[in-house]
Length: 451
Image (cartoon, rainbow, N blue to C red):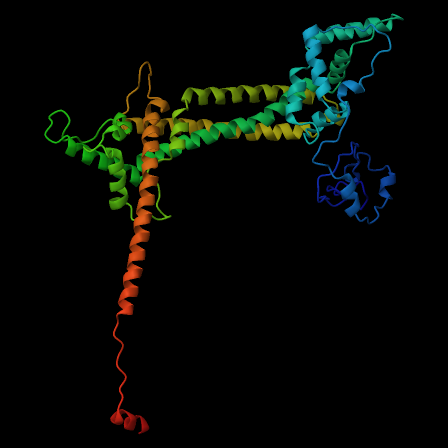
């Protein structure tokens, strides 16, 4: 079978995985299996790779943790020998671009490689963001090009200043603006959608815990029982079947007659001693949602979620549009890997976004059901109960409850240890007073032993 055969569709060389990341070599590769002209012959068909021990090579050419020291990109742009230069940019804009150039210890080929190959190992995303934000605007580019055109016709034309030269070089990267925009959307999408997903999942988890956890219901039952007992005989407060949640944070302020403890501390102690079989042990589980989870849930707003997802929709649409532009404008040489990577990203991103919108709708429904479940009403100008209205009360209550719960668990642990030590002491004492059987002695016993 010939080398150029259509059946020969996989790379001829095996995949190599260096033991450490290596410094990049910016070449344009040739692969024989992808050769376009099957009837032509290449030298590479005859070249054989020798067996090499790469141990020393890895030590010498592995990518170091410390970035290779390069001159600022501003130093790579030649300074004109003449004193006068052509400034197109305003002083403020020129200064901003100049500062960026001084901070970039990169070559322009590094930047071009990162953009065309979607490779951020050398040029990180933060740098791409800065380059995108400082790129030449259309009016600036028009002025720069007009100056270059007019300079051709003049002998003593002023050369462009360094910032202008830098912006010109950036503009010469094929589809710089469109490509970087897409790369940045791709990099921020995953982080943004994950952030929304984490928050919505936490909100759903808190709703589920408050509604279905056995411990939550037991604690509320105790509060109801003790509260009804305290309100016994009162026509407006006694014989309650429930209560609004705003009382929960105030339980710590209800003190005992001798002022030695609060109603909340009593309820916590009672719960642990009568409802939790694992109290005072490592297996003891906190019965309420964690205070930190409740606090985070109380800070969330459904409008914010919808706005975040709407922005992601717009970003994806814009990214799709820019991707199409690049694919139309790009040469065959620079079309890949951009085209395949962006198409794959856009397809997957839309699927994730659709799933997240569905999750948001379900979570909001669960939350409103929970609010109705606990008879929580909207506050002030709210049309619907907000997470803050519902969860801030629970956050304060759970924080107070957990402090007392941990303290009471330590006391129970000490009591268990003390009881165990007392049991051991008593066991030892009983063993010490046990009467040992008397050994038989005398003539009869001795005669018996001989027989």
